[in-house]
Length: 155
Image (cartoon, rainbow, N blue to C red; front, side, top):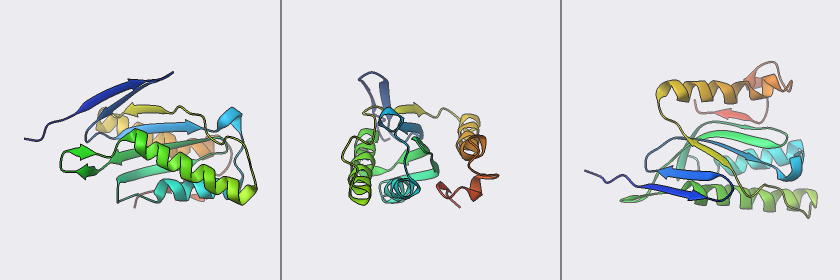
């Protein structure tokens, strides 16, 4: 039987990691910086770069000043999963560098912290999935989630 590891860390927000868990993640731009459409595409691509390699993203939306996603880290080694901390560092670091190159932006792009929640059951998973899907619709960016160019979900 495989041992399940649970790890808790805290900065301003608590962060819990549980092997094999699905997470609801939200991360925000620094001081509500509004991402251009080009920057949003960079963030979308950055999030999906290791999809189905290090983790699985069932659903993702990049809004003007924040990102929502469901994410399931995969095994890195026999008894070790990719950590949410490492995944988020990779996404934020790479997307920041690419946005800076594309836009000549010289400041901070992302807040240090993120909101993460371990999804507890299928009912919660479906509710979060629908919340993420409807985010661009509620914000008035599109009539349907699929019309919003920075929305992605697994088929």
